[in-house]
Length: 332
Image 1 (tube, rainbow, N blue to C red):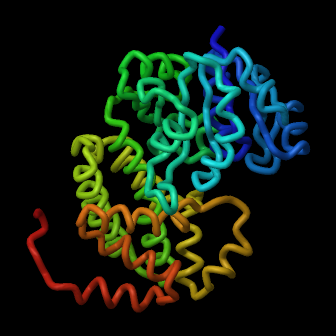
Image 2 (image 1 turned 90 degrees about the horizontal axis):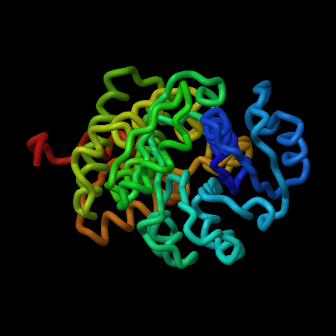
């Protein structure tokens, strides 16, 4: 039986642990909070996925060494901006030869590194062992075993296939891809676009407005991803368009919900105060904008979202700025 270690007991880490367990993989989760670990060992995670029973193949511990021991797959499911600090403590514990899987969808502040790059740098992990999983992955729906698909990306296709085999549940269909750059960028940038869509929703705008933001947001994502070496086809697939639509349109989306509150007039600090889980786009919009600027890529939606979150602009000012831009051809 394949054994996987999952570092992180949040909603997506827990839901993906259930996917692994339902696929026949034995799962040991690591959690920082003893009370959450106790819940998981009792078969639930009421803090993050209330009312959902977890498979029996899942156990949990607060000891990272115990979680990692003997695992052939190690899954990292912590907030993206905490990865570096956490991995510095975990790197020596990771089994040699294990596939290292990132569920995180962000770009590191300061370095503008993707999560796979942070893993390679801090953990000393060969890129051929690093896997990025992304797609329309709303955690609660997956934990409820509703059908979903996702992308398992690794530069080594055999490693990608090994991880895909371990998470191919009856309701979860993984597709392999060798485009790690595109897969990660699609997952990170869609969070920022979802903030914009949420703001439009909160301001009372309709589906035309939201569809326009999604479509132009996809154009920005693709421009940036291709400039970094991603495959354009990736952005038309599950890790691009699929994840973007789910995150921008679902009330289960943390980033969309955060944006809705901003659109209704709440300040960033007020929204943070009532938000229980991490909305990755709030922090990553700054690093993604820096990444785009470093490569000379025009990303007006990302730029304006960052202006609301970090520079004090209002959503209404952002709308006016976007609509008053010089007109141009749709396709560059």
